[in-house]
Length: 94
Image (cartoon, rainbow, N blue to C red):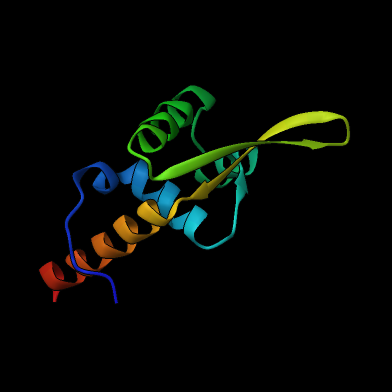
């Protein structure tokens, strides 16, 4: 079980949602994440950039059907931070 640590970066609603979707899979394409969250490309890009800069998300370019796509996955640091944040929220609300 991760140590409960409230993380202000992850706590922002859209970034929390991003982490939740990406944590549920090994990786998620940017366009799929945009569709699931119903958020503009520019807003999603801003939030993703903040999570990448913090070392929480990893970006990978993949090629599919001749097109380059951006795939996102949680780093081990990001996974620890996300699940630690969830534990902190449980303590706060419990």
